[in-house]
Length: 339
Image (cartoon, rainbow, N blue to C red):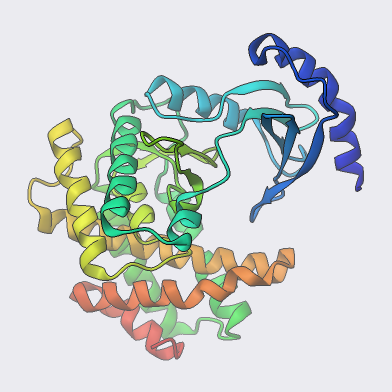
Protein backbone atom coordinates (compact mmCIF):
# COMPACT_ATOMS: atom_id res chain seq x y z
CA UNK A 1 0.00 0.00 0.00
CA UNK A 2 1.48 3.38 -0.98
CA UNK A 3 1.10 6.61 0.97
CA UNK A 4 -1.75 7.91 -1.20
CA UNK A 5 -3.76 4.73 -0.77
CA UNK A 6 -3.23 4.86 3.00
CA UNK A 7 -4.41 8.47 2.99
CA UNK A 8 -7.45 7.50 0.92
CA UNK A 9 -8.32 4.66 3.28
CA UNK A 10 -8.19 7.09 6.22
CA UNK A 11 -10.58 9.44 4.39
CA UNK A 12 -13.09 6.82 3.25
CA UNK A 13 -15.03 6.10 6.50
CA UNK A 14 -16.08 9.74 6.87
CA UNK A 15 -16.95 9.92 3.16
CA UNK A 16 -19.12 6.80 3.38
CA UNK A 17 -20.83 8.22 6.47
CA UNK A 18 -21.52 11.44 4.57
CA UNK A 19 -23.04 9.48 1.69
CA UNK A 20 -25.04 7.12 3.93
CA UNK A 21 -28.36 9.06 3.76
CA UNK A 22 -28.35 8.68 -0.03
CA UNK A 23 -27.01 5.12 -0.09
CA UNK A 24 -29.45 3.69 2.44
CA UNK A 25 -28.70 0.97 5.00
CA UNK A 26 -25.28 -0.60 4.56
CA UNK A 27 -24.94 -4.38 4.85
CA UNK A 28 -23.18 -5.66 7.94
CA UNK A 29 -20.21 -6.95 5.96
CA UNK A 30 -16.59 -5.86 5.97
CA UNK A 31 -16.01 -3.51 2.98
CA UNK A 32 -13.39 -4.31 0.36
CA UNK A 33 -11.29 -1.76 -1.54
CA UNK A 34 -9.63 -2.88 -4.78
CA UNK A 35 -7.96 -1.24 -7.76
CA UNK A 36 -10.43 -0.41 -10.52
CA UNK A 37 -8.41 1.35 -13.22
CA UNK A 38 -5.80 3.95 -13.99
CA UNK A 39 -5.27 6.27 -16.95
CA UNK A 40 -2.61 8.29 -18.72
CA UNK A 41 -2.71 11.01 -16.06
CA UNK A 42 -1.85 10.82 -12.37
CA UNK A 43 -5.45 9.87 -11.57
CA UNK A 44 -6.40 6.35 -10.55
CA UNK A 45 -9.60 4.68 -9.40
CA UNK A 46 -10.57 2.18 -6.71
CA UNK A 47 -13.75 0.16 -6.31
CA UNK A 48 -15.24 0.09 -2.78
CA UNK A 49 -17.63 -2.80 -2.19
CA UNK A 50 -19.75 -3.75 0.79
CA UNK A 51 -22.02 -6.64 -0.08
CA UNK A 52 -23.99 -5.67 -3.18
CA UNK A 53 -23.16 -1.98 -2.81
CA UNK A 54 -20.35 -0.77 -5.05
CA UNK A 55 -18.84 2.72 -5.28
CA UNK A 56 -15.87 4.23 -7.11
CA UNK A 57 -13.19 6.25 -5.35
CA UNK A 58 -11.15 8.68 -7.44
CA UNK A 59 -7.60 9.43 -6.32
CA UNK A 60 -6.38 12.61 -8.04
CA UNK A 61 -3.23 13.95 -6.31
CA UNK A 62 -3.81 17.71 -6.03
CA UNK A 63 -0.21 18.55 -6.90
CA UNK A 64 -0.85 16.96 -10.32
CA UNK A 65 -4.62 17.09 -10.86
CA UNK A 66 -7.25 19.72 -10.12
CA UNK A 67 -10.53 17.93 -9.35
CA UNK A 68 -12.66 21.08 -9.26
CA UNK A 69 -13.38 20.94 -13.03
CA UNK A 70 -14.55 17.32 -12.67
CA UNK A 71 -17.15 18.37 -10.10
CA UNK A 72 -18.25 21.44 -12.06
CA UNK A 73 -18.45 19.73 -15.45
CA UNK A 74 -20.28 16.73 -13.98
CA UNK A 75 -22.97 19.24 -13.00
CA UNK A 76 -23.10 20.71 -16.52
CA UNK A 77 -23.44 17.27 -18.09
CA UNK A 78 -26.16 16.23 -15.65
CA UNK A 79 -28.06 19.46 -16.35
CA UNK A 80 -27.88 18.62 -20.06
CA UNK A 81 -29.48 15.22 -19.43
CA UNK A 82 -26.30 13.19 -19.88
CA UNK A 83 -25.64 10.27 -17.54
CA UNK A 84 -22.60 10.89 -15.34
CA UNK A 85 -21.51 9.41 -12.01
CA UNK A 86 -23.18 10.92 -8.98
CA UNK A 87 -20.70 12.54 -6.58
CA UNK A 88 -21.49 11.39 -3.04
CA UNK A 89 -18.54 13.02 -1.25
CA UNK A 90 -15.52 15.05 -2.24
CA UNK A 91 -12.36 16.44 -0.68
CA UNK A 92 -10.73 18.64 -3.30
CA UNK A 93 -7.91 19.60 -0.99
CA UNK A 94 -6.78 15.99 -0.68
CA UNK A 95 -7.93 15.05 -4.19
CA UNK A 96 -10.46 12.33 -3.30
CA UNK A 97 -13.99 11.83 -4.67
CA UNK A 98 -16.55 9.16 -3.83
CA UNK A 99 -18.58 8.38 -6.95
CA UNK A 100 -21.46 6.28 -8.17
CA UNK A 101 -20.27 3.05 -9.77
CA UNK A 102 -21.51 3.10 -13.37
CA UNK A 103 -20.72 -0.56 -14.05
CA UNK A 104 -17.75 -2.67 -15.01
CA UNK A 105 -17.86 -2.74 -18.82
CA UNK A 106 -16.91 0.11 -21.11
CA UNK A 107 -17.97 0.31 -24.75
CA UNK A 108 -14.42 -0.72 -25.64
CA UNK A 109 -14.59 -3.82 -23.45
CA UNK A 110 -18.02 -4.72 -24.85
CA UNK A 111 -16.68 -4.42 -28.40
CA UNK A 112 -13.62 -6.52 -27.60
CA UNK A 113 -15.80 -9.19 -25.96
CA UNK A 114 -17.87 -9.55 -29.13
CA UNK A 115 -20.97 -7.74 -30.35
CA UNK A 116 -23.12 -7.95 -33.47
CA UNK A 117 -23.73 -5.14 -35.95
CA UNK A 118 -27.19 -4.25 -34.64
CA UNK A 119 -25.89 -4.01 -31.06
CA UNK A 120 -23.00 -1.83 -32.24
CA UNK A 121 -25.40 0.57 -33.90
CA UNK A 122 -27.55 0.63 -30.77
CA UNK A 123 -24.56 1.52 -28.59
CA UNK A 124 -23.19 4.21 -30.85
CA UNK A 125 -26.53 5.77 -31.74
CA UNK A 126 -27.16 6.18 -28.01
CA UNK A 127 -23.71 7.77 -27.68
CA UNK A 128 -24.54 10.14 -30.55
CA UNK A 129 -27.80 11.18 -28.88
CA UNK A 130 -26.06 11.83 -25.55
CA UNK A 131 -23.39 13.87 -27.33
CA UNK A 132 -26.00 16.01 -29.06
CA UNK A 133 -27.75 16.71 -25.74
CA UNK A 134 -24.41 17.87 -24.33
CA UNK A 135 -23.83 20.10 -27.35
CA UNK A 136 -27.32 21.60 -27.22
CA UNK A 137 -26.65 22.77 -23.65
CA UNK A 138 -23.63 24.77 -24.84
CA UNK A 139 -23.21 28.44 -24.09
CA UNK A 140 -20.17 30.69 -24.24
CA UNK A 141 -18.05 31.78 -21.27
CA UNK A 142 -18.96 28.75 -19.16
CA UNK A 143 -15.99 26.58 -20.12
CA UNK A 144 -12.55 27.81 -21.21
CA UNK A 145 -12.23 28.36 -24.96
CA UNK A 146 -10.71 25.72 -27.19
CA UNK A 147 -9.01 28.45 -29.20
CA UNK A 148 -6.05 28.76 -31.57
CA UNK A 149 -3.56 29.03 -28.73
CA UNK A 150 -4.69 25.72 -27.19
CA UNK A 151 -4.96 23.98 -30.57
CA UNK A 152 -1.47 25.10 -31.61
CA UNK A 153 0.01 24.12 -28.28
CA UNK A 154 -1.46 20.64 -28.75
CA UNK A 155 -0.15 20.42 -32.31
CA UNK A 156 3.39 21.22 -31.18
CA UNK A 157 3.44 18.00 -29.18
CA UNK A 158 3.97 16.15 -32.47
CA UNK A 159 7.24 17.79 -33.59
CA UNK A 160 8.52 18.09 -30.03
CA UNK A 161 7.78 14.60 -28.71
CA UNK A 162 6.91 12.24 -31.56
CA UNK A 163 9.24 13.50 -34.29
CA UNK A 164 12.18 14.84 -32.30
CA UNK A 165 12.12 12.54 -29.26
CA UNK A 166 10.61 9.31 -30.53
CA UNK A 167 11.75 9.30 -34.18
CA UNK A 168 14.97 11.23 -33.48
CA UNK A 169 14.05 13.56 -36.35
CA UNK A 170 13.99 17.21 -35.21
CA UNK A 171 12.21 19.34 -37.80
CA UNK A 172 14.52 21.06 -40.27
CA UNK A 173 13.73 24.19 -42.26
CA UNK A 174 11.80 22.30 -44.95
CA UNK A 175 9.82 20.39 -42.31
CA UNK A 176 8.99 23.62 -40.50
CA UNK A 177 7.70 25.22 -43.70
CA UNK A 178 5.34 22.33 -44.37
CA UNK A 179 4.35 22.24 -40.70
CA UNK A 180 3.45 25.96 -40.71
CA UNK A 181 1.35 25.50 -43.87
CA UNK A 182 -0.42 22.49 -42.35
CA UNK A 183 -1.14 24.24 -39.03
CA UNK A 184 -2.61 27.26 -40.82
CA UNK A 185 -4.90 25.01 -42.88
CA UNK A 186 -6.09 23.12 -39.80
CA UNK A 187 -6.68 26.18 -37.62
CA UNK A 188 -8.59 28.04 -40.34
CA UNK A 189 -10.96 25.09 -40.74
CA UNK A 190 -11.35 24.39 -37.02
CA UNK A 191 -11.95 28.04 -36.10
CA UNK A 192 -14.70 28.28 -38.74
CA UNK A 193 -16.72 25.55 -37.00
CA UNK A 194 -19.71 26.10 -34.72
CA UNK A 195 -18.71 26.28 -31.05
CA UNK A 196 -20.13 23.83 -28.50
CA UNK A 197 -19.17 22.15 -25.24
CA UNK A 198 -16.41 19.67 -26.10
CA UNK A 199 -15.72 16.64 -23.89
CA UNK A 200 -12.29 16.19 -25.59
CA UNK A 201 -12.04 12.44 -24.99
CA UNK A 202 -15.47 11.19 -26.01
CA UNK A 203 -14.59 7.65 -27.02
CA UNK A 204 -15.40 4.01 -26.34
CA UNK A 205 -13.02 3.76 -23.40
CA UNK A 206 -14.87 6.55 -21.57
CA UNK A 207 -18.44 5.36 -22.20
CA UNK A 208 -19.99 2.74 -19.95
CA UNK A 209 -22.47 0.16 -21.23
CA UNK A 210 -25.74 0.75 -19.37
CA UNK A 211 -27.42 -2.15 -17.62
CA UNK A 212 -30.65 -2.89 -19.45
CA UNK A 213 -30.01 -0.50 -22.34
CA UNK A 214 -30.50 3.24 -22.57
CA UNK A 215 -27.98 6.04 -22.41
CA UNK A 216 -24.29 5.37 -21.78
CA UNK A 217 -22.62 6.78 -18.70
CA UNK A 218 -19.95 9.31 -19.64
CA UNK A 219 -16.59 9.41 -17.82
CA UNK A 220 -13.30 11.36 -17.93
CA UNK A 221 -14.85 14.70 -18.81
CA UNK A 222 -12.78 17.00 -16.58
CA UNK A 223 -10.84 18.56 -19.50
CA UNK A 224 -13.94 19.82 -21.34
CA UNK A 225 -13.68 23.11 -23.25
CA UNK A 226 -15.84 25.29 -25.50
CA UNK A 227 -14.77 24.56 -29.05
CA UNK A 228 -15.34 22.97 -32.47
CA UNK A 229 -18.52 20.96 -32.99
CA UNK A 230 -16.90 18.11 -34.93
CA UNK A 231 -14.30 17.24 -32.28
CA UNK A 232 -16.19 14.77 -30.07
CA UNK A 233 -17.83 12.88 -32.93
CA UNK A 234 -14.43 12.60 -34.57
CA UNK A 235 -12.82 11.16 -31.44
CA UNK A 236 -15.77 8.77 -30.97
CA UNK A 237 -15.38 7.13 -34.36
CA UNK A 238 -11.63 7.54 -34.94
CA UNK A 239 -11.00 5.73 -31.69
CA UNK A 240 -7.62 5.64 -29.97
CA UNK A 241 -7.80 1.92 -29.15
CA UNK A 242 -10.01 0.31 -31.80
CA UNK A 243 -10.19 0.77 -35.57
CA UNK A 244 -13.35 0.66 -37.68
CA UNK A 245 -13.54 0.18 -41.45
CA UNK A 246 -13.89 3.56 -43.14
CA UNK A 247 -17.42 2.87 -44.52
CA UNK A 248 -18.74 2.11 -41.01
CA UNK A 249 -17.02 5.16 -39.50
CA UNK A 250 -18.45 7.37 -42.22
CA UNK A 251 -21.96 5.93 -41.79
CA UNK A 252 -21.87 6.76 -38.07
CA UNK A 253 -20.53 10.24 -38.79
CA UNK A 254 -23.38 10.79 -41.25
CA UNK A 255 -25.87 9.69 -38.56
CA UNK A 256 -24.34 12.19 -36.14
CA UNK A 257 -24.45 14.95 -38.80
CA UNK A 258 -28.10 14.25 -39.67
CA UNK A 259 -29.29 14.11 -36.05
CA UNK A 260 -27.23 17.10 -34.93
CA UNK A 261 -28.43 19.18 -37.89
CA UNK A 262 -32.07 18.38 -37.14
CA UNK A 263 -31.49 19.20 -33.45
CA UNK A 264 -30.13 22.64 -34.34
CA UNK A 265 -26.36 22.27 -34.10
CA UNK A 266 -24.90 24.66 -36.67
CA UNK A 267 -23.06 22.15 -38.85
CA UNK A 268 -22.48 22.55 -42.62
CA UNK A 269 -25.72 22.07 -44.55
CA UNK A 270 -24.10 19.55 -46.90
CA UNK A 271 -22.45 16.37 -45.67
CA UNK A 272 -19.39 16.82 -47.89
CA UNK A 273 -18.64 20.09 -46.09
CA UNK A 274 -18.93 18.33 -42.73
CA UNK A 275 -16.68 15.50 -43.94
CA UNK A 276 -13.94 18.00 -44.70
CA UNK A 277 -14.38 19.61 -41.27
CA UNK A 278 -14.14 16.38 -39.35
CA UNK A 279 -11.20 15.10 -41.40
CA UNK A 280 -9.17 18.24 -40.68
CA UNK A 281 -10.29 18.23 -37.05
CA UNK A 282 -9.20 14.61 -36.90
CA UNK A 283 -5.74 15.46 -38.23
CA UNK A 284 -5.24 17.92 -35.39
CA UNK A 285 -6.33 15.33 -32.84
CA UNK A 286 -4.29 12.49 -34.32
CA UNK A 287 -1.10 14.57 -34.37
CA UNK A 288 -1.74 15.68 -30.80
CA UNK A 289 -2.37 12.14 -29.59
CA UNK A 290 0.84 10.85 -31.19
CA UNK A 291 2.72 13.58 -29.34
CA UNK A 292 0.96 12.80 -26.07
CA UNK A 293 1.66 9.08 -26.36
CA UNK A 294 5.36 9.78 -26.96
CA UNK A 295 5.45 12.19 -24.01
CA UNK A 296 3.77 9.63 -21.76
CA UNK A 297 6.42 7.11 -22.73
CA UNK A 298 9.53 9.24 -22.35
CA UNK A 299 8.46 11.59 -19.57
CA UNK A 300 6.07 9.44 -17.55
CA UNK A 301 7.46 5.96 -18.12
CA UNK A 302 4.27 4.45 -19.64
CA UNK A 303 5.45 2.93 -22.94
CA UNK A 304 2.40 0.88 -23.90
CA UNK A 305 0.39 3.84 -25.24
CA UNK A 306 2.75 4.12 -28.23
CA UNK A 307 1.69 0.63 -29.30
CA UNK A 308 -1.39 2.33 -30.78
CA UNK A 309 0.64 4.82 -32.85
CA UNK A 310 0.13 2.84 -36.11
CA UNK A 311 -3.63 3.39 -35.77
CA UNK A 312 -3.18 7.16 -35.75
CA UNK A 313 -0.69 7.08 -38.60
CA UNK A 314 -3.29 5.16 -40.61
CA UNK A 315 -5.90 7.83 -39.79
CA UNK A 316 -3.49 10.52 -41.01
CA UNK A 317 -2.73 8.64 -44.22
CA UNK A 318 -6.45 8.17 -44.86
CA UNK A 319 -7.07 11.89 -44.40
CA UNK A 320 -4.24 12.73 -46.83
CA UNK A 321 -5.78 10.41 -49.42
CA UNK A 322 -9.18 12.12 -49.05
CA UNK A 323 -8.09 15.77 -48.86
CA UNK A 324 -5.61 17.10 -51.42
CA UNK A 325 -5.01 20.22 -49.29
CA UNK A 326 -3.17 17.96 -46.84
CA UNK A 327 -0.20 17.66 -49.22
CA UNK A 328 2.10 19.37 -46.63
CA UNK A 329 1.24 16.62 -44.15
CA UNK A 330 1.83 13.93 -46.77
CA UNK A 331 5.28 15.36 -47.50
CA UNK A 332 6.10 15.41 -43.77
CA UNK A 333 5.01 11.81 -43.31
CA UNK A 334 7.19 10.74 -46.23
CA UNK A 335 10.26 12.52 -44.87
CA UNK A 336 9.62 11.03 -41.43
CA UNK A 337 9.35 7.60 -43.09
CA UNK A 338 5.85 7.11 -41.71
CA UNK A 339 4.26 6.01 -45.01
